[in-house]
Image 1 (cartoon, rainbow, N blue to C red):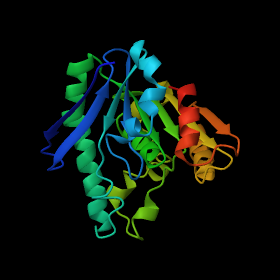
Image 2: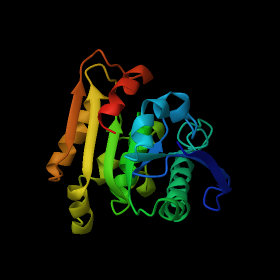
Image 3: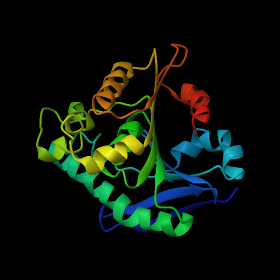
Image 4: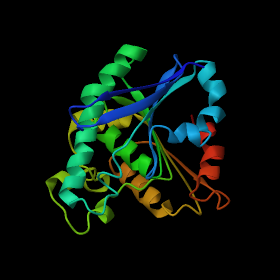
Amino acid sequence: MRAYTQSWHSPHTGRQMEFRHFGDRGAPVLVFPTTSGDHNEFADRGMIHILADKIERGHIQVLCINSLHWEGWYNDGCEPHRKVEIAVAFEDYLVHEFFPYLRHATGMDSVIAFGISFGAYQAANFALKHPDLVHRLLAVYGSFDIKGLLHGHYDELCYFNNPVDYLPNMNDPWFLERYRQMDITLITSDSDLCLQRNMDFSHLLNTKGVEHNFYRWSADFPHEWPSWQHIVPHYL
């Protein structure tokens, strides 16, 4: 399997941004890390090994990006508005820096946006804001509401990065048509701490006429990596 790490200094984030690329053929899977994760997390948790056969056969190639979680969302010393500004800077890095790389490296214009836990929020938010860059969304045990990280602060920038708020008011035909064309899958379980949030988000998609897959595993699969190691290969 071809595998390498690459990085460059991003003018949008103001820091070195690393990522890892596994495979050289197949649908590109853009992996958003979990709360404490980085570009090494997916491999360190054994997921590349678990998916190795699919990567080597050219069904998928996996691109694991870094995050700015501890500079923004999970930095208690960061002002709430600044948290969202950092998230938007990261989004700009993806759109204006990472995707040009992806097009050059893979010859493809869109990805499977994939995330687990907080990564599922990031994958969903990115897919909903840029449906021209995402043809499939796979959100595993996610939560889609970031207000709890904002300590009561809320403004327009927060609104446009909180899917449970902007999606109900989305009436733009350009976006809705692409949402309805996107292959969207939500995965949760009876013991997932985000179960109700997944159910609510599924209902929200239904109200917008967005067909999607919703899978609810048994309570034997709690919100932790052993569950995800078992579940993810069924869908990727």
